[in-house]
Image (cartoon, rainbow, N blue to C red):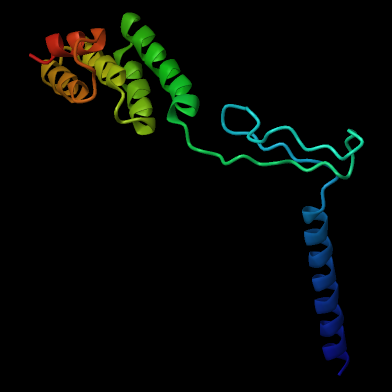
Length: 156
């Protein structure tokens, strides 16, 4: 009987501690700023109470968060493209390939990454792979664009 009481006391203690932990996680002391991956707040200004002051009457009005590829992905892709281009210029072709492939894992439809891969494989004296990646990049490049012209000349 003593074991049953001890077990009951332990279970009661565990339940009490978990409920206190959950209650402390739920309560906040002020408005919470929710940021997207670019660091911008995703809510508008909080509403003030009637006397214009903040305080407990402040309510954060959340705006819907829409995935915007241009806002969140492009800076990362731009950085990886320029890094891969620098590595090609420095004749560090294997690193350029790794960098461009990392970018393709983020955005498969970026023709500049295919161009970097084509240049890197050309630097490694592998014209077959260079032509392959140039042709792949042509699928996503805009006709008449500088990237399109470079990919076109490398795809032959």
